[in-house]
Amino acid sequence: MSNETGTFAVKEKKVVCRTHAADAVYGLGFIGAAIYFISQAATFWLGVLGVLKALVWPAFLVYAALKALNLQ
Image (cartoon, rainbow, N blue to C red; front, side, top):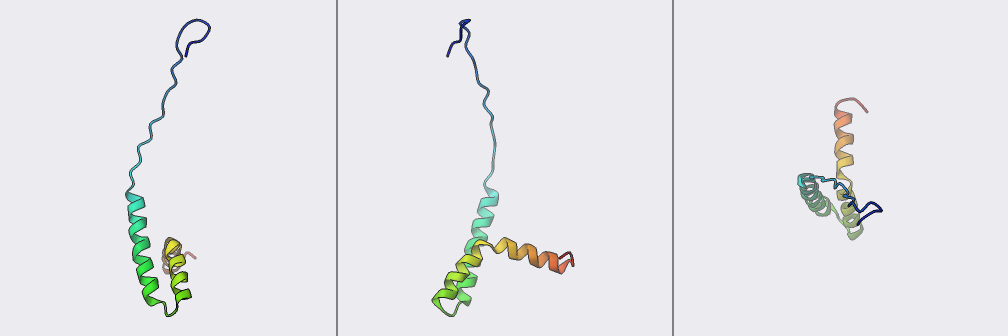
């Protein structure tokens, strides 16, 4: 693109480097939690509840850690 003076405008690009290690850890944790909760389920609906629990397992982990440290 050129402007009125005939020079070219250059936009600076912002480069963001992101590793996906945390995504992998969360994914493996989800799979492990889903297997655990589903294996403990006695009915189909408890298995569905187990999948939902597997989605939010970090919240359970933080709650238990705070409770153990008497910070809750």
